[in-house]
Image (tube, rainbow, N blue to C red; front, side, top):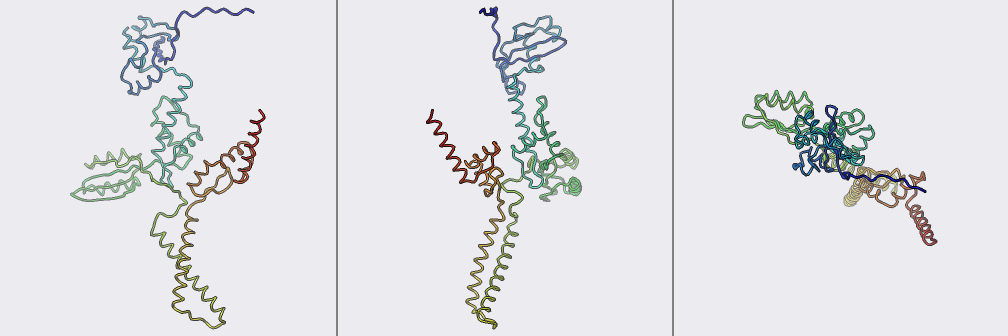
Length: 386
């Protein structure tokens, strides 16, 4: 059986090369660069041109090693100085990248956009930021596509406007400190009120008025122009005001005075109900005649019911204040938020997750343990029979 004889290639082909191509006036010019260096040069991170270019030579086809003609360089660029031509191609040319490199670049920019959106937005109901995982899920739901020719910040601002049309999300307010002359304070406050700004503090001293407020980012330029017009100054305290700490809308009221007042009312109500029940039971025991309790016994009973009422209030607070999370995969309640997170790491949840992917119903912890033992026994038998 004959084999096909091919002529050997007499030239050494370039490998590990990032090609930057520029088409101009009907001619094609290419330069050979190191991978991952072109973007660093365009971002002004890399300063040494020798670390970017593999050779200071202009090609018409890098893969075939065909050099560009000097007459073409003079006609298109007005010079045959290859160093100057390489710089122009490096700045204006199109970077030829492989599929994996392009995918990695788009994935990194997708993450950057999600991070910017997370930093600039909040949930309007809780004023807390969304997690980056939730932002990425919302981006995929609206089929967001990354544009490599636009900056991440510009795309993030456009994305926020799109998300506001479908989901409860809003721009986080900016916290500003505005200092204006005292005679201009009324004009400033009137304008802030028309912008629905939140005035947190107002101080007047030494002939000036200092106002701490939260305004929407869309009014920042107008606010800056207004303060300049009133001969004042503007200080940015925070670019995005976001509430911190864990918790949700189903947790207790944050007002401690309110909680203590509610607890006191509950204790008094239980005390009254307990003493009433004690009086009725004593009356029924001794007949129809009313019974006058001894003051010492009354005080002892009051103390007993106070202790009991306090315990009931505390237990009720714990049960009602902490929202019981439900795992849909295991079809059972798993406790508070911390226990909910720990549940996802358990073998029980992982086993039910595998069953869910196979279309099988979830198992209880005991059933899961028994099923796992059976699977391990079968695996041991298979290993032994080999």
